[in-house]
Each structure stands twice: as structure tokens, then as C-alpha cells.
Image (cartoon, rainbow, N blue to C red; front, side, top):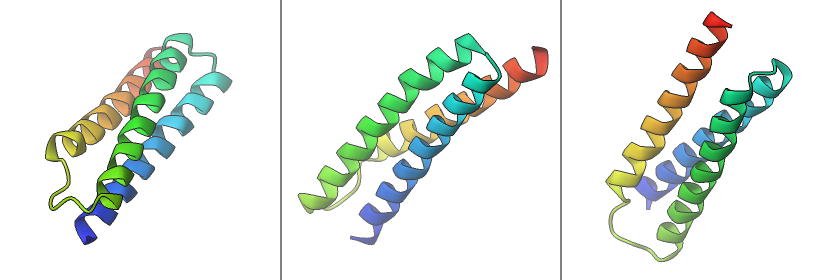
Length: 88
């Protein structure tokens, strides 16, 4: 159960980070980052709902592939925003 709670919290944090990058990119008028962040925020919310469903269904183990995807997508988005912001 604790692993599922950690998975939900990780997915929630990733969704919040993606949403925050979208808002910041919106203010800085970085159109490509806005588009990427909006798509990836939707993906993160999907992963969050999937993690909540796994917790409610009382599955034995959280999905490791989904957890890895959550982390990789978040790292990619932060790196993409940083790279674009640096060269803009």
C-alpha cells in the first residue's frame, strides 16, 4: 500500500511540475515548450489516474514501467524548457 501511495504522490508531483512549466512557458511566450508541456501534462494526468486506479484495485505491485515513464517525461520536459529558455 505504501508503494502505491508513493507512486500516486510521484505522479501528482510530476503533473504539478508539468503544469507549472506550461504556465511559465505561457508567460515567457515559448510556443514550442507550451505545446510540449500541454501534451505532457495530459499524459502525466493520465498516469496519475492510472496510479490511483491501481491503488484502488489493490494491485500487489505498482507498475514500474509507468513510474519510469513519469520520471523520464518530467526530466525531459524540464531539460527541454531549460534548453529553450537558455537559447531564447
